[in-house]
Amino acid sequence: MKSKLFPPIALVFWIGATTSILTCSSSFAAEKRPNVLFILCDDIRWNAMSCAGHPALKTPQIDRISKEGVRFENMFCTTSLCSPSRASILSGMYAHRHGVRDNFTELPANLTHWPSRLTSEGYDTAYMGKWHMGENNDNPRAGFSFFATHKGQGKYFDTEWNVNGEAGKVIPGYYTTVVTDMALDWLKRDHTGKPWALCVGHKAPHSFYTPEEKYAHTFDSVRVQYPSSAFKLDQKPAWIKDRLYTWHGIYGPLFDWRKQFPDDRPEAVKDFENMVHGYWGTILSVDDSVGRLLKHLEDTRQLDNTVVVFMGDNGLLEGEHGMVDKRTAHEASLRVPLLVRYPALGKGKVVPQQALTVDVAPSILDLCGAKPIENVQGKSWVKLLKGGDSSWRTSWFYEYNYEKQFPYTPNVRALRTDQWKYIRYPHGDGSPDRHDGELYDLKADPDELVNLAKAPNQASRVTALQKELNGLLSAAGLAGSADKMPIDEGIKKELPDQKIR
Image (cartoon, rainbow, N blue to C red):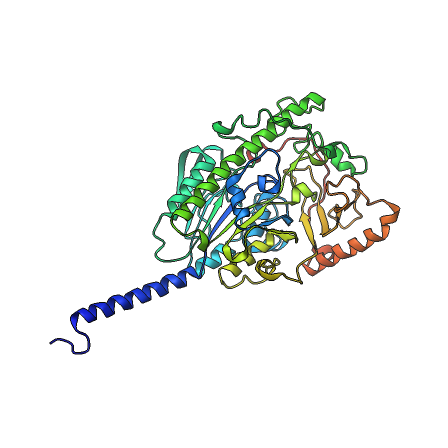
């Protein structure tokens, strides 16, 4: 019997139209939950991009994120060390709270982080690349739908991977290319209608800096000198001079770029130049990778519904104050790039306010409309970008704990305001500091050449900044003896174990 309400043709039309409406509604709902492409570099300096004014590096693909989005010109890590900073980026917490204080500690499996929160709220999530929390563990970590990593630092060529639980798989080729291929393969999968969040963890530009062949000689004609701050150490704490001839000093081995060391001859700057050229060369491959990922999103019409984040885990000293590596509270060690592309946040913006690694998790979750993580210490910058935030921070504190495996940097506690930086070096047992402190007027002296800590006319300022630092530490639960740290055993000359370099 034929339906009097719906003749066959009308019924087909009604069913098709209803299905179309439901499909459109479903697609519209999905579009309201943006995808996330999170690209993390290791040890990339804040200015190692042409959009930040680098005179030699040309990074057009990375620059595109800045041109079409937002660049934070004052972005900082709260601990300048790979594993603690990565844990802070994921969790929104300082190292003393999430517990990853060194490069050998696992991220607690029960700790909520922004990808795990998105997973629980219906996102398809993946991590591929350098994880580096748990030196000898390449197993999949909790909170992701898909996970691929390797043990330790990985290698620039032919790294052995654990791909979603399948361990012992050597994938031939250059690391940056391999991880990008892996990312594109995952993006092309069927995500069953879910929004997705993909984290790509590059090894580059971490030491030992090894460009792929096509970029191995790109900078041969570019001369590089030690920076002027390398020789302005008379007002600095004595430990900085002691570091000059160590693994983390400019006269040391320079991550194997200098074979005969220590070497303080003027002509030995050539080894330093070669090291810097290698570092820059690895970043050119990262730029290629960014271009490939953006092109795929553009070709598949997903780009404008994707929050694209490009950043580094910590800064890198490139000869400043006679140092290489990171860990210290000096600007080159603290500063990291942060670029964000998402149309709702604006186009071509440069943000002057101080943002921190602990702000990344609350900001991504805010953009995705997800439930915030409890007890985070960071703050979402979404309001700041959309219309301004009068309550935004004007100061914050930095923490780093002395490492026996890398005994070249003391315990550090520092305060950075919009204008001033005060650094102290606690001994670790509650006794008076045994290293002189540092004070810099960052507006007048952005390169931190003149230490004002002992200047008579700055005594009251030192007292005020000490009080502010203590107040911030206290608010974070680190008052007095609650701020646990190892005993500073002094700067040592021995090289670190080969396995952990």
